[in-house]
Length: 406
Image 1 (cartoon, rainbow, N blue to C red):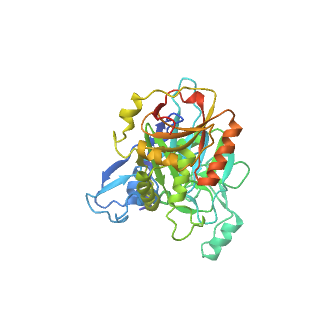
Image 2: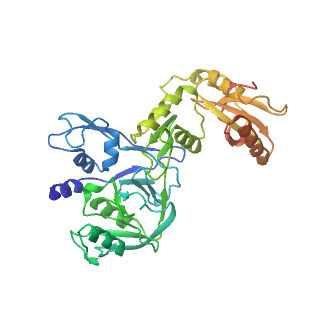
Image 3: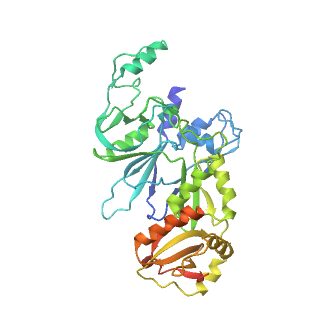
C-alpha cells in the first residue's frame, strides 16, 4: 500500500500560474473528475496535487473511502491569493497551502506556484509572522528532539537520537530551515498525510513538490506565516469569496457563522460594502467552508442597470481633492439607500453616486486634506457604524455619475 501511495504522490504536479495584476486575485480553474473504481479521495487528492482536508471539504456527501463509481469529484484547483505581499513564500495555515512568488527576470512573466501542505497539530503550529529561509539541506539526517523521543517512548515506539537519510526519515530528501529556529519546510515519507494537521509544527510537502521547490528558493527568501481562513478577491468585475475551517485553537462562539469574519475579509481586501442581495451568498460560503472561490458580485452577467445608465452620465472631474467611499452597490436604488444611512452632512460636503462599471459607489467629499478625510471617516464610523475608504480625486478620471449630489 505504501508503494502505491508513493507512486500516486509522484504523479502530482505543482500548480504554477501566471501572477494576475495587483488588482486581481484569482488563479486556477475548478475541475471535476469521475470517481474510479477502487480509488479513494486520498488517491484523487495526491494524483491532482491536493491535500486531504481540502478535497474532503470540496466534496461534502461523498464517502472519502468508497466514492460511488462514476460520481463527479470536485477538484478545488482555483484559489484566491491570500491578502499578503506577493513576495517569497506565503503559508496560510487554515488553508493548509503554501504560495511561492519567485522573483522574475525583467523579460519574464511573473508567476505564482502553490502547493498543499501539512501543518502542526493543535498547539504546535508555526508562529504567525515573517521569517526567512536559512539553512538548506539535501538528504538530511534527523536529530530527533528529546520531547519527540519521550513522546514516542511513552507510546511504546522508541526512536533513536539520529535517523539517517533514507526511506525511514520523516524529513524526506530535502529541508529548508526558517532562520535559526527548529522549524522546517521539508518533504515526508508519509505522503498520505499531506493536507492534515499532523506534524510537530513543521511544514510538510509531497516529496516531488519539495524536490521542485527546493532549488527555486534561495537562502534569505522571506517566509510569511499567516492565518486567513476567509479570503476575498477580484477577477475582472467579479468579486469572489473563499472560506476554510478556522484553526481549532482560534476560539469562536459555538453559534458563530463567521459571516462577520468573511465580511471583514471583503472590506479589507476589496474595499467594497455588500448590498443586501449578496449577503445570503456570503453567509452560505462562510457556513459551508468548502475552500472554493464563489462569485458574489455581480450575481449574474449583465444584471446591473449601471451598464446602460453610467455611460450616459457625465464623468466625475478628477482633481486634487480627497473623497470617502462609503459603500458600493449593484443598483442605483440600493446606493441611494446606502447614502441616506450617512445622515445629514456638513454643508460644505456632498454625496455623489459614481461608477466605473458594475458597481455604484457612494462618494462623500470633497476634502482638501487627507487628515480631514481620515477624521471624518472615523466620525461616520462611530455615528453610523459605516466603514469608509479614502480615494484621491486623481484616480477617479474613469468614473461616471450614477447620480450627482443627492
